[in-house]
Length: 119
Image 1 (cartoon, rainbow, N blue to C red):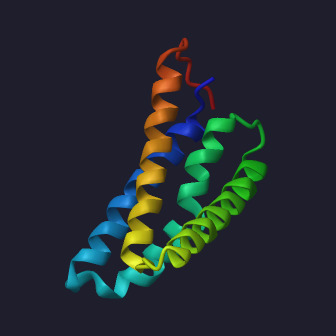
Image 2: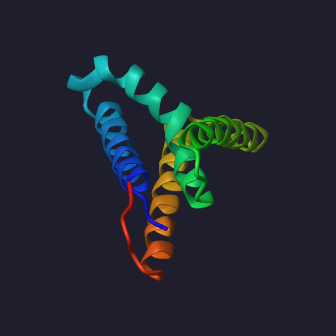
């Protein structure tokens, strides 16, 4: 079932993707780069995947999301290091793609069901 929490998190994740992308590409936003990137890498990719689990408890979902994010970041870094192709911007881009795909997948899965937004 679609909850208000899902909608809020999907919006936060997509807004965080845009913020990180802008902070990374625009030199005038350099002071915001570190906090935006830290927030995104620590929370967003995993929360996008945790939303697909439809857990009842928001705190448990947040904890699982942070754990997923750390695992995703570590796996991407290890794969890129072993391939001798590690680049921080590329890793960040891959994490953004994972987050966006998970949000879109969540929206598509909800679209197939009866939509009833609950608090």
